[in-house]
Image (cartoon, rainbow over all chains, first blue to last red; front, side, top):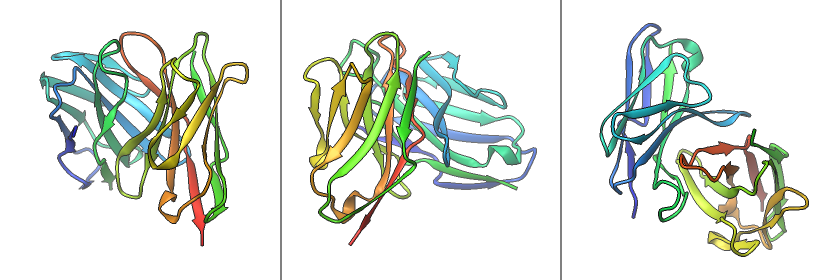
Length: 115
Length: 114
């Protein structure tokens, strides 16, 4: 079974803090993704990576950065947390198109509260 | 640009009744289409996907969806709802490119009444 793990299920931070969210997958997937999930808005893509040290902006990258130093690990960084970044953050991974399919496998999510 | 619209943010059915969750997409070329389910306090799990084989796709837990190109729809159905089906359901579209990016709909919360 594919496993995608996220470092924390719940996180409480103060405004202005630097926040690191970690995601690890064990299926040797090339693609990894970070989404935020807000009620009524579905999932919105923040950043994705299709290879080590490669990254591309998604639809809402402002206020975030990412790091992918190893294939299995993809980190989301909030440089200076703000209250409007209170949300559920979901990490996902997949093989690239043309491989075994487009299915994205999701972690359990990190619910972040910024005070 | 691709987009996905899920009609109805909340759907309520009785146990044993038909489940119908609607999804319409916008895409200039036939895309890949997905339905994911999210149970409370969990990540998303794939229910089924359409990747250009049979237009009627069967998934897990008795769900199925039919790709209708003429209607640009990919509605999710289940003949008989079970209490355990209560969850949030997301439709998603993927452009056939080399990135595998998904675009999600807003989600539909399914409530199942006893």
